[in-house]
Length: 170
Image: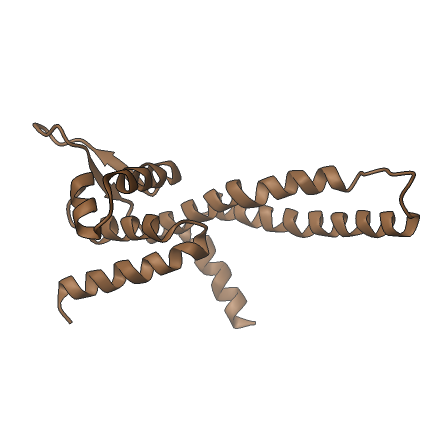
C-alpha cells in the first residue's frame, strides 16, 4: 500500500468513527487529514484534499479549534491561516472525552436533578415514587460516570494505563 492510499484509508476510517464521538463525518475527516499531515494546512488545502466546500472546511476547522483538537498557525509572510492538529493521542482522547462530558453528560445531569424532586398531588403515588426512584438511580449512575470523566480529564496517561492494566488482569 502506498502512503497516499494509506492516508486516504485512514481519513475515511477516522471519519466513519466520527459519529461515535458525537461529531460529523466531515469534521472527523478534517481532523484526520490534519493529524496525518506533516505540515500545517490552509483551509484551501483542506478543501482541495477532502473535496469539500469552503464553508464546510471553515465550519469544521472552527469546531475542531473549539474542541481543542486543532490550532491556528500563522506563517511569516503568509496572509492565509494554517491549521495543525494535536498529534498526541492521549491529549486527543482526553479532549474528546472532556468535550463529550460537557456537551452530553452535564446537561442530562441538570435535567435529572430537576426531575427527581418533582411533586404532583394529582399523580398516582406509586407511579410518582417509581419515577423519583428512577431519576435518583440515573443521577447516581451518571454522577459516577461524570466523576470518572473528571478524573480522566485531570489524570495523566500513566494513571489511565495503570487503571486499564488493573482492569484487564481481573
